[in-house]
Length: 144
Image 1 (cartoon, rainbow, N blue to C red):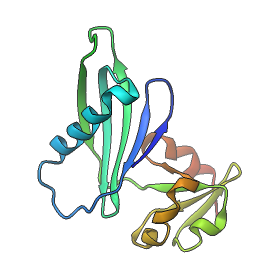
Image 2 (image 1 turned 90 degrees about the vertical axis):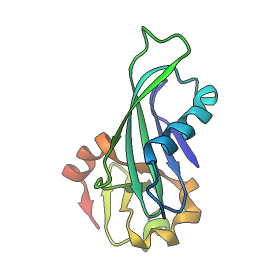
Image 3 (image 1 turned 45 degrees about the vertical axis):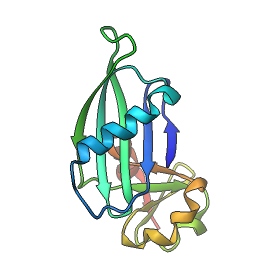
Image 4 (image 1 turned 180 degrees about the horizontal axis):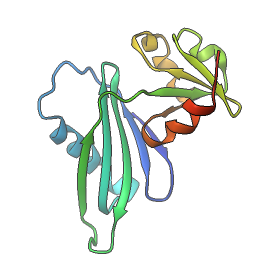
């Protein structure tokens, strides 16, 4: 599992698991977030952008409101399995095996695809970028 703190209230999570079964994905996501609730100090109403791929589950937790929630947590899970997910790193050689690589703002971005397994043990050397953060990259990046 990899946790990236975006702000005081927003997080991105990558959970590696074998995605053989689609049995109640919403329940699986709720369990994961509930386990992390105290560690991440989550309370309030969160929108959870969820993207499930063969190589893991990607979650973007976005806090919507907390004024009516004391220590409670409420989740609105939005499944977006067709999102492109990029792996961001400063070191080109970590992602050189990926099929699509872009360069933007002193970082290399590799499109996470079926060849990502070769990079999997190197996830500590970068971050995953997906969802709302990817627009600038796609519009302004240079294709390598």
